[in-house]
Length: 65
Image 1: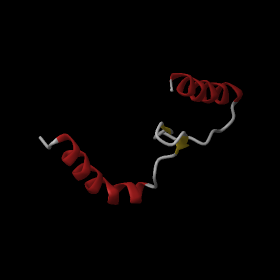
Image 2: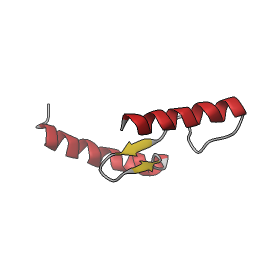
Image 3: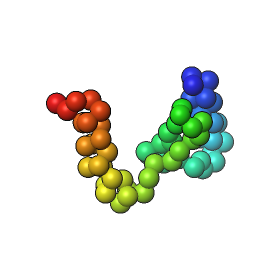
Image 4: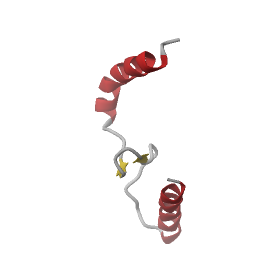
């Protein structure tokens, strides 16, 4: 996990130094350890629609506040 994260960070640093564009934006990339894959953030509209459902699910998992 640490090596993969370091490689992603190195890739982004090298892209900046060489002046190349990368596939990431201000929201970054996400490493999904359950399914070894790099995931991009969802579209802003989709994320806004899913946010209440995700918060409810997290509250249920943590026992709420």
